[in-house]
Amino acid sequence: MSTVMEDEIKRWTAKRKSALVMEILQGKTTVAEASRSYDLPPSEIETWIDEAKRGMENALRANPLDIREQYEKQIKQLQEAYGEAMLELRARKKLQSLLGEDEK
Image (tube, rainbow, N blue to C red; front, side, top):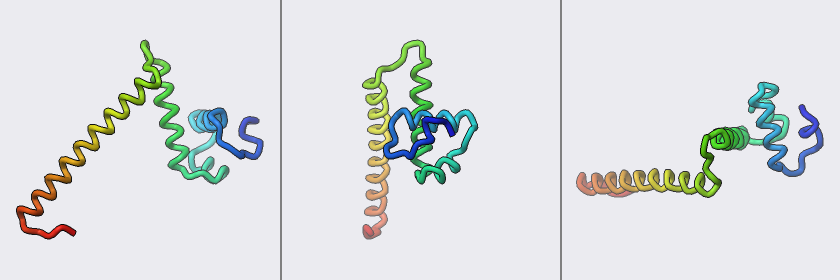
């Protein structure tokens, strides 16, 4: 591993996270290997990779979004998904009541 990763890691700083993500993207290691080596859940490492990809995509845009715009866009998407889930839940409850089924 690189010199950034050689010291015992006490805290995962952005610099350390980005070094690990770069090693994975460059094929020097895998998520599974990194997970075992650093006793991290694979899902956490995959989240770092996803965040890095989003940041990279934004950085390469002709007109990059600022952080606030990115978060506002993400919040809007989450609110829409939540609204859809609530509509589905209400529809299921209504169907149960029409069919005479007791709520569990």
